[in-house]
Length: 454
Image: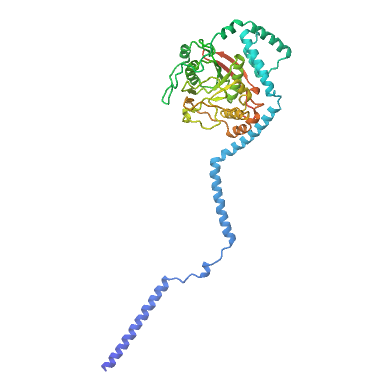
């Protein structure tokens, strides 16, 4: 009975346990079912997207990216687009202007050189012997406009020239009795400025007082000997009076220690128009040639002060680039074609290349153009040693150079233009000539730049 009860009790217990387990399992299944999800169908993951949508999506991204780049580029360089279009139009106008110059009846360079020599000699005789009553301005305008001389007038002038020469035997004999100065001047100081030198604050009046031996107009020659070289110093100038005073303070004593027969010309552009340095130098060359039989010409920037008087301003065999080492450029020659700054050139060499081009309106490149002219006619450039050919540059605000596209276009044609563009074709007016104690001041009206050159 006990066994039966136990068995019955055991079976009852077992049934209760199994019932409890089923209930617990049922609750667990309900909980799991509540917080779990059915697996996502694989058809949803591998659903195909039309290729056209993908293509449109990437095209949209590309358009957005390009638009952003274009916005940035336009904001930075948009102004340059219009300026480049303007430059292209001006380059076309330059071509048209140069073609118009070629169509003008420009005197061939050989004939012009002959006419120039005749006019220069006649002008000198006018000054020396007073053969005519014409004024200096009228004489210079005649040279600048290339006035031709008739054969009858030329014969008359030759007769007056011969008569004038015969009336000066005493002066010629006096010159012959003087000995030439030494080839190596004995009173040179060598280097008198260095990197740490400062410039004195002197007035023009003080310099005039110190160098009272300079004749009116800035001319001087040694009295104890006959100078071997006759040199014209031409200084193109604009708004640099303080620099001019400093240069005169140093230049006069250097030229005197070198025992040169020299005269200083300051060529200033009239008005506030576009600067043309080349026309100023060409005009001063013509004027100086009409005054005196100079053997060579030194074209000298007003802001360059020589440091060593052994850097000779005497007339060289070939064109001499004198400003080889400038403190502003770390006393190094920046490129081989550079001949600007201070250039010493003989009269015949200047005429051989027709002087400077008149087409460089604005600042820069007229000196490089002259270099290519020398190269075209096989005239080499010589330079003194950099240890001697040293200059200090006076501080000033750098002017903005002219547009490089225009300068490059002109430089490319420099060798082709020299026969018709230069001192033979210079157009200008001398509005005034004033002889100051230390220099002759020329005021030049260069006119307006042709279309495309402004």
